[in-house]
Length: 488
Image (cartoon, rainbow, N blue to C red; front, side):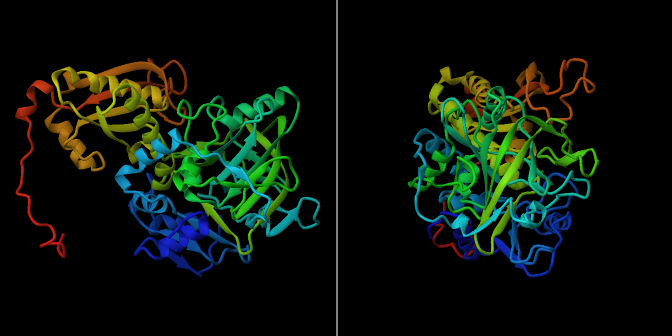
């Protein structure tokens, strides 16, 4: 069936066995909802045991939020992501790579948008974000209720070019949000900095509960999608139809027309917020490496002008350190790496996997193919290109084409039978990586000069070309799988 928004996504999952569970039991969005899903769903890197491929979960009865629902875990399994994007799960990176190379730009529609069925204005006497948005907290020490799956859409004050990205946003008051914009990492941060130089607010729309193709596509980063590249065009390429936008009501900006919720507001020029100013816990929320992120004192402030939503809206959220975040971040990472390498070394890397243990950012496994003696060494070139394609990457593992990169046991088999530590490790110390890695800190090692600097490492688990005939895996008889299909 055709998928073009969150509701059609859920209809598809209902047709797939074991991919969606629903409950009418009342749940408190303050930590309880995430606590429940930890036992039911895809889990993450903390408080194990948890399942890796559990179902998505839809809560119909949200405490203090009549008529609203909350969805979690939609993208927490590669199988679900593949079904929702219409491809095989091993080909997701290649699908995203092709979509990024053949973008279909969004269009602004003049039809009445589903996201504006219900309108709440900041001038309304009862306007209160805490009551309007059933935003969960992931843990009891979160800074506050977080919007973790908001598609932030804004336009550069100089160029007029628009972009969509995902940022963590915390409800701070009845009409204010904090937004964490990591310096130099995302396009909207650059837009906010330029607007501040001009002493102007930056209009921003935040669309929640949208087509999964938009959610995954919005997680691309430079250099694959440089400043001025609108990631909504990636979703358009995946769906072979442009993403439909609608003009906002209270600000001069557009929003995603079929979203469940839209928050309209303005990033205030030069105004910074302490993220945990209401709770003073010292923490923001669980981040993708599996640790509680520290509350920032440098968040930007969004003054909200209006909230619109569909009737009986569905709030979509994600647990920070989870398979869902891995897929959101990791599949675009795979696409970016595959794109960069294929341009320079066509056909030499057959697939890429951004491994879950690295949160989709820290570790990539490259499946390399050596066909002639001059291919020897190109696998290491491919690793260097991977670091260029995705600067936050820390570790690259290289394996041969006969190794299943999506099976960690097979990758470790290659490491144990085709790898010698004194010969096959290449280290590149002193390179900027990711500040959320707790080991990338001067306290951890005197070799680290500044927070966020790491030693990037290549683990070459490929067989030297001259020895390939000595490393042939055991071959088994090809059988008629149709004859045995009820057992296979």
